Amino acid sequence: MTLQLPAMLFYRKKVRWLQFSPPRAAHYGPQRGTDAFLLGVTIPTLAGFFDQGRWARRLLQMSHRYPALWHAMTAVACIHRDFIANSTPITMSRMQDSSQVRLALQQWNKSIQSLQELLSGQVLTKFDRLVILSVCILFITMSSLQGRLWQAFVHINSGLKLIHQWKLADKGEDQRDEDSDLDVLLVLFTQLDSQARPYLPSLSNNLQWTDKQIILSSSTNPFKSLLEACVALEVHFNKMMQIYTNNSIYIDGLDAGMQIKRQQCLLGLTEWDARLDKYLGRTPQPENGKALKLLYVRRRLAQVALSMDLTEGELAHDDFVEDYAYMLRLMGDILGDPMDPLDSQPADIDQSQNMSFHLETITTEPLFLIALRCREPTIRRQAIRLLRQYPRREGICEGMAALKIAERVMEIEEECLSSPENACARGNWICENHRVTWLQFFLVHDRQARTVVHTREDLLHGQPGREIVTTYW
Image 1 (tube, helix red, strand yellow):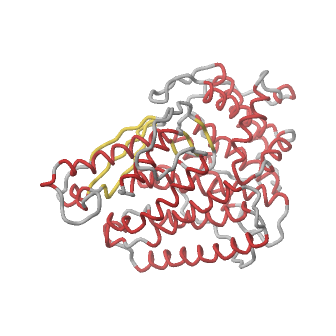
Image 2 (tube, one colour; image 1 turned 45 degrees about the horizontal axis):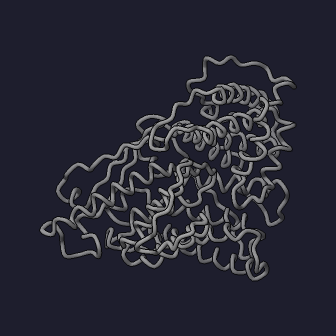
Image 3 (spheres, one colour; image 1 turned 120 degrees about the vertical axis):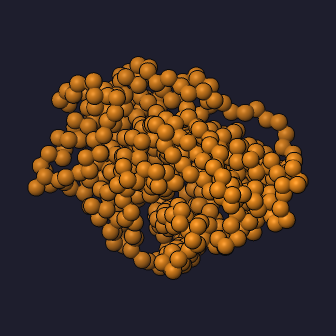
């Protein structure tokens, strides 16, 4: 039986002029220098904190058997090399027409050709499926490195549909090698789905985004690794994102169904805490301290969102200032920032001007949320400083775009500070009416997004929001 994959998995834009050629042995060897870059720079970037290099090594092993994987890895290495070596200032949009980009497009087409041959009529093994999902992750990586959000959304959606179609999240207690490989993929796809959620109201009709959730088997046993803990936490985090990116809750509040989902999320997180505590009791010195801190940040973000009293609107965030300060300290540690993140008068330090890329979600998303929602001036400004100091693209989350939006939101909200007559009685630091309450995200085209921000006052008086246009570097 021929497996029918989502047609959009093979989506390719602006490369149709390239001619397909059948894979040959010679195609396995990339141009001189690309292989070293792939091994030394790109693969560690894909691996992230939780993999400890295992999945990365497996990619290399699998690539010798699967041309589709090898060509995709080579394409990503070329684009990654161009991303890092590009000298265009990060405040400007860069041109993407170098020899590395042209080689990447050729390799990408060869990967698609080989992938189609892999899928032509044969029964797929679990290993084959892991390879296909890995190729899909590489396509997402390539799209993100080029700033092509639409392409990235297409491949994220395809990968999620395959995970559900193949029931790959249904695992028992016995962990095998390929299950560890799958855990890395589940983390990445779940994080990417969470990142895409704010855009879905404007995209879902075109993409037919899957609303299925990954459901892991219930267990009270301690986690076997931080990677396993990360998979479980990201599944809970994604469920939380599906609740809080539903715009109706900000208009009508949480209905009974949403209340049940929220309580289930809180219960799941409590069980997650117990399993992590058991793991740490057996492993007092985890394999990666930064990975553990990252878990704590993600866990606290979810707790804040799920514990918030939505009837208080944006004022509810004022009850979580200590939580925001806690997360800010952890992210300073993860970034290796030499400064006290809670110093209200930080010393001048040189600003990094080099954009870095990471496939997993690390600091950009939480820093953006803190800068957006925490109105305590020191914490907010330090979150913005870290976004500016460490420009990064993580998954499909663009750090410079997040910085621009956060700075503009702070500017809008602080306008009331210079006009006391416009202030209202309620609210610490920023009055209730002038707080940005609702953000809408729209994809203008592949490398440009439009964000519309609405204050409470805008919504009360039926006024249009203010637009912020951001372009991916």
